[in-house]
Length: 342
Image (cartoon, rainbow, N blue to C red; front, side, top):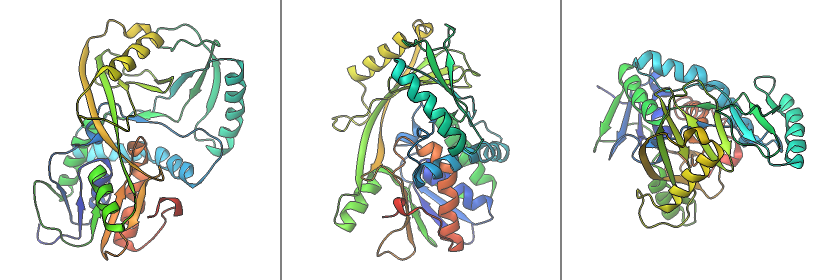
């Protein structure tokens, strides 16, 4: 590559998505990942693209809605250019409702979703039918929303790398020189660097553990049960996750907390009880202190930018994060919500 217009540091979902967005617009991009693609939480197995609850609307929820609605076209283009699958599918989600109060609240949210989701998706309260792929519901009722989608994190990462290269971009594993403006999308380590540079706590990591089973339900909706995501993937696997651990010893080690997650999922969805276990996974998710993504210019460092703090919603936020970051870096157009700025 003769000249680089933009360097992206970090091979997680924010870094890859920003590099792809720039490359698809014709910019010459160099992405540098020092370890491996998806070395942090972006190399996990869950891949739930889920919205916030449709109430108490704010810029973060509006930003996420726009990103989730962009996702179909975003991932279709990645798949087309790369020639590789991403595992994307907008197949909706089911949630059990515990009691009559939960049913009433869900019905109220159904009304607010009509307005807030602008008719692009729905949040419905439906009776449980007892089908195999249906979570046990104490009330006999379920929430069915049509906005949720799934993505296979590792397939998506491979497809993004191939798509960037197909557009003439560089993807370097190891060390390389920065050229042009730099977007730092370096996860937990990047949050530590920001905190040290700015002299205040910007954020850190939260460990998550998840498990993958061999079970073929490629067109089934995802489930959200008692804080757990159960995601049927297109490759004949089902991912269950995850824990949220603020204190841990081993970044990538799994333990009894994951076995508890597994047991809760089987109790909620007995059809999975005999499914073979394929993998137990653990990794660290970058969480900003504000719990919102951190986007925009790095204070005091001209030409340096930050895209970090995806935490649990990074894959769902990625299309919109990529758009606003590349608008800012390449075009000087700043549409980043105030709550996302340093």
